Image (cartoon, rainbow, N blue to C red; front, top):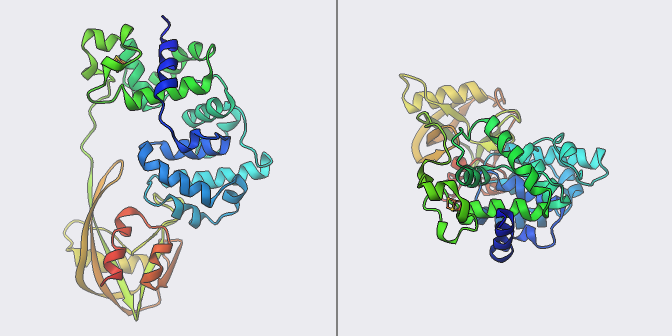
Length: 351
Ligand code: SF4
């Protein structure tokens, strides 16, 4: 029997209910797929529901200030996705009459939409027969077909797209793509796949040759660099100083406490005084430690040391930031912050 039949039959019985699958719309598909990149379904669901309540239409997303969109995204990480959503919403309103383009080629012209998202929207919202190839799909089919090519290479993704394209022509594209992604998430998992309940087991190369642990193939990653960061919670009367990251930087548009990387030979306090002087041009007195926070980004890890500081002199200037302001600690929760900085807020409010 054709594997697509088994797969679609399995999907019709086993698919999980998800808010974007009830009354699906092109807008909802786009938002959910942007959130689902690098992020698990269970994490995305509450974010998706809040986002759609806050920005129910493309027009409302386009009209919203970027800071509000970043706040709604806070905690999901990879903030360029939120900035691109906002940019693309404006383009859709201005150039496409407020309607999500209905085909893969046009979707690819929008900010933040690459081959995967374009294929997902094209197929799920418009039944365009374009296969999606994400991490789940790569894992399922390198195992199923016994492909030992490096899955981090673009050529492997292109090859798999070409191999899947004929199969999606004869079925409902939205079901086909969601079924293979769902199979990867629920059955053909990275570790301990549930082969005994898999609809593809009959002809699966990895299962029959006992090569599941070897597939998919990806070369070992180099050790992830670690940076020591020091920031100051600088008090002046009952307010603290925050700065806004430039939009073209990593975590662009988010607010943070002034500080930066420890340089060779410096103590944490020396680094903080230097960084604050370089960033906002003021003098401070460094006090006690507020907290030490560890956080992992996709390509590096940080240990962030936060100090209680008192403003001493100078007029703050946003030298390496796009903006700065003195705020009451109570209002910090209303602004978007990166995760490690956000963890400091309860400590500051309760200090
Ligand atoms: S049989 Fe096992 S390894 Fe093969 S596709 Fe299914 S879950 Fe994955």
